Figure 1 (cartoon, rainbow, N blue to C red):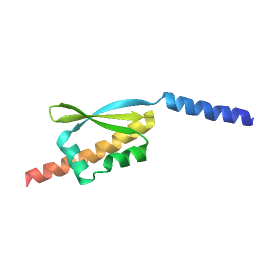
Figure 2 (cartoon, rainbow, N blue to C red; figure 1 turned 60 degrees about the vertical axis):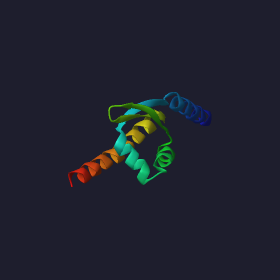
Figure 3 (cartoon, one colour; figure 1 turned 90 degrees about the vertical axis):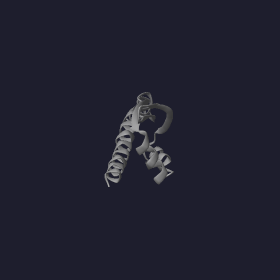
Figure 4 (tube, rainbow, N blue to C red; figure 1 turned 135 degrees about the horizontal axis):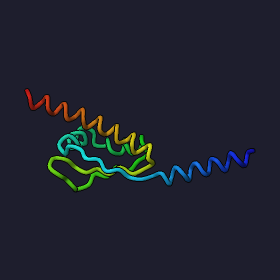
Length: 100
């Protein structure tokens, strides 16, 4: 019985590693820049909290920058949602500033 549990744990770890991948997300460049300027270590905090690699590329289309998230599938989705929330909040704040 114990050997089955150990084998199950090993298989789960292998499957988790195999499910790792990357995802491209596009974020408003100005809002992303503001987030980074407000908290310079925000990317390392996200990487640590969600166990993902965050790479901001030099690829920009119109007003958006390409960001690549790499890690387990679940962690990448969680990090994406968190980053989108942060950037969305910054976009709202920027719009409110411009309307004043």
